[in-house]
Image (cartoon, rainbow, N blue to C red; front, side, top):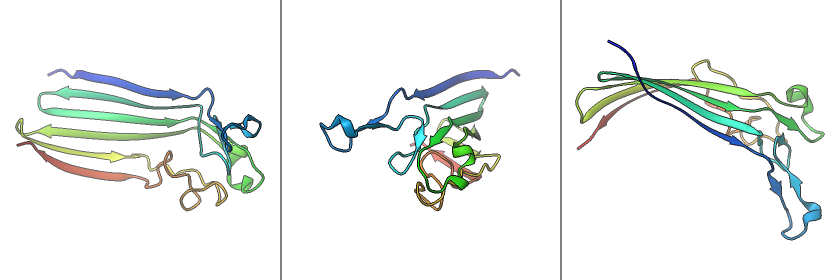
Length: 153
């Protein structure tokens, strides 16, 4: 009984420049949002990735996902006290899941997202998109348990 690696995947994104031009054609007003968060820029880390690894043995599958968001600098004057060191440090969230295939038509899956229940960064209402948090990148739900049955026919 040996484990068989079915795959290790990484999907990464490196932002060299994220230029915003508020008035099309007027490059004097353009600004770069890469690596910053502000009232004008949604949190845009220079590097972020999702990495998955899965193991398979017979009808069992066990997997882990790592969601990583790099640090962003804060540009602005308000809410600085809520943002650690004038920015948001890097964040990692770990998800685990597993499944069992009863037949080729019926599979049970279960898992836990954000297994360590990491809290999202508190940023204050100036740059927040949801209750003093930046929803979208950072996990605002906390630990989340899920189960499902999949029936193919």
